[in-house]
Amino acid sequence: MYNFQYERPYLSHVVETLEDSWDKKNIFIIEAPTGYGKSTITATLALKTFEEGRKLIVAFPLRTLLEDQYKKISTIIRDEDVIGKKYMHEYDSLYLVKPITLTTVDTLSLTMFGLAPEDLNTVLKSWHEWTGTLQGSSGHYMFSWSSVILSDIILDEVHLLADETKSLTFLASLFKHAVNYDQKIVLMSATLPDAFKKKIFQDLYSLRDKISLLNFEQDDNFVSSRKEKTYEVRLEYLSDTDKYERLLSWVEDALMCGLNRALIIFNTVKDAIRFYELYASKNGTDHVVLIHSRFSETDRRRKIERLNQLKSSKRYVVIATQVVEAGVDMSSDILISELAPANSLVQRFGRFLRYDDEKNGCAYIWCESQLADEKYKVYNGELCRKTLEYLEKNHKKLNFHIPNTDEGYAKLINYVYCLEHFSIDKKWVDILLSTFTDFDSIANVVNKFLELEGSFVRNAEIIPVSPPSASETIPVSYPLFNRLLKNGLVTSVILTDNTEKEIDVSRLKDFKTTFRYVIKENVASFRVNCKYNPEIGLLLEGSADE
Image 1 (tube, rainbow, N blue to C red):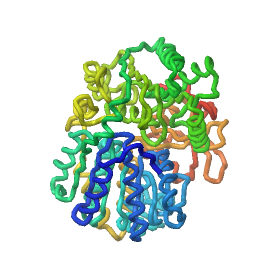
Image 2 (image 1 turned 120 degrees about the vertical axis):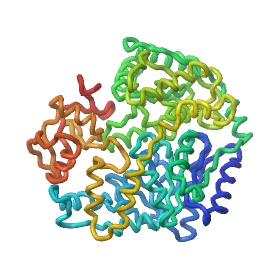
Image 3 (image 1 turned 90 degrees about the vertical axis):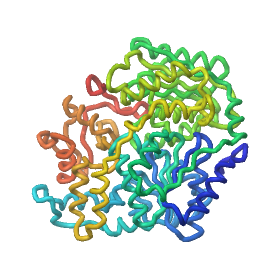
Image 4 (image 1 turned 180 degrees about the vertical axis):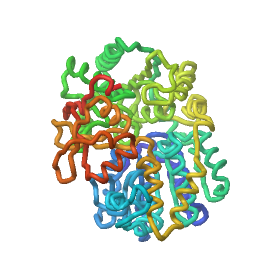
């Protein structure tokens, strides 16, 4: 299924350790390089679950990764009554009830705290704003609790839960929850800084004996095959006025030199779209695909299907945002990435010369010269500055495919991230865990959910919008929705019965009021006066596209 050219002894070591320590530990943190085959561990545990009649939830930060893993696991477990998936608009495993369920971290968190997506609207409708109590249905919250409590849990690409205090606080809550109910939690990532691991052991000191950390052990065959890959990372500084033309010249030069598969990653949707339009105007669209977050579900699936078709042709150009860092199964021999924090860069290079038989390529990392602000595009400015500082001294010898060597990427990650970058709100950990001792009412969970602005995990919740030219909704972050609102581009609401009515803008003062409005008024999406193109996505203009 995974077609390794060489044996992966570290994977065997992980499986043996899990088997030996399964009854002694509750939390297993597993590190392995990108492209090493960590998903084999997921498949192995899924097969163990199937054979022993247990229950397993596998949670992913991105739906694209979920779908890819579902296809792989379904080749070894073919019983649809045993394996299922659950996320927005996908109801194959309601309440995560199937013995093996693949889901998103968001759906896991909601179900864990008794607000399963299946019940969410009904429960929130019965919530009384002034009293903070429920005056109607409480949903099936105890069933939701038990569905998670009775499961072992795998969290893939867990580094994406370390970026924000809210998500790391949820992770700490999940750890304590697992120990309290004797669950098993398996976390996997290629990029876990030493500071992150130290923070976990420091802030969750009482759990230290229940945590097993499996650091990547040297695999001579794997390291040798990665060292055979011939490329030099070039670091470039571009101005905003000519960056697209410079980037285009790099791609065209590399393709003319015999390389065939280009991946160009931008930090913003706006830049990705503009470069796609430039490239397509000069080279056509028969071998190029644009991937970012502002597509409808149907068009997003179509993009992935098109990418899979292009992969068989051996020549393609993929223009994308960070959505390809995890969950898009592809490789390239031309990688051009905008500067991003070290973790993101390593994940991006995981889509470059990914497979054992790929040996030659070219790679660029570029940035715009101004890095003085608190943010660089969508990223933390300090993390980007420290990443750039390390690259300026080490980019010519840096190997993004191997962690633990003198030239490996672990030194980059540990240089960039320190303890101060990881924060756990211990007060909120206790608050969240207290919900499991309140068996009389789910109202307290609803209050906490609204106080956390509609997510136990993310700082920016997703709002569905509907441009006139799209047949489906488009997901956008709340900050982007707020910009659309302030620019007068949100014109009406579409209700769940498909009727459309005027919008009461005064009820959309902040996220909390917007969220209440959506629930109380049965809003399915917000009509926005924006263009939509199935090939390019949601198009924004002016300050709304900053």
